[in-house]
Image (cartoon, rainbow, N blue to C red; front, top):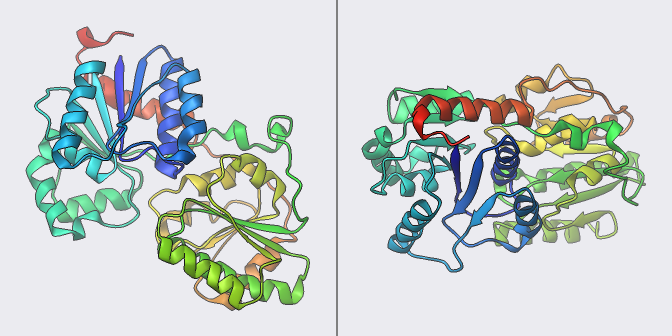
Length: 361
């Protein structure tokens, strides 16, 4: 089968990391896979692109930022060039653009957003017009499906397919492949884009409480700088508290497995998430976790060394981080949340809508 995976922008972020894993999994299973995008590749995606190309996955990204018509022409050329049997569009804008094309290829739309995109009236109107152009609507969480039902209505094929991670890359017995980094012995790490919803400011405030009891602790913040103003606020708060020697404000990192192996606690104070890849990677690594008490993290409450608290409360959040520093690493079984599980479920959707005579592998 020839499968086109469409993303908005090639960048080092959760949805794109998932797409990379699924694409390589399908390519190795004997299918022909292409990843395309609406926007040019960002610098932090270079290592992922090299990994995709080494696995035989085709990458077709524009070299320039196109306007609306240019994006449509680019996508049409991609489809004409690759000739997919099935298209998987990840995120709202990618799904809208590809369904405007005059093609008959079956399309599945995957909703990754942790917020309700249809609160935007223009997006709601567009989706109501284009809804049936998607053969399947996939949510990475039940909340995605609930939002769609409430705002758009019922679609003939709706399903929840949770994100998955390659647990073997993060497992504790994979030390040879992901050796520990030379970091402070009591490091807390938060991985995620610099946007208000990821709440790095809450972590810094809670970390002040940690230092009162654990002066050797260190905080590492890593992620794509998406909101320049918010990133500046994070840096300013670190300076305001005089924590320059205790808090590292870093950019995107590709060595996530090594960071998780080397750190003592993983912090995830997100105000909203659909189904976070970073959270799943932390679960797979066995690192103690302190996360916000939001519905999308609820499934992990029964796992060892996972604490779900109100991370907007600096006292409660700080106590939880302090307690987690003394927790052991744990082996967690992620049945249903592995990359293999997710890739197989995507393939089952593709086989449902692609005529058997069209399948090339």
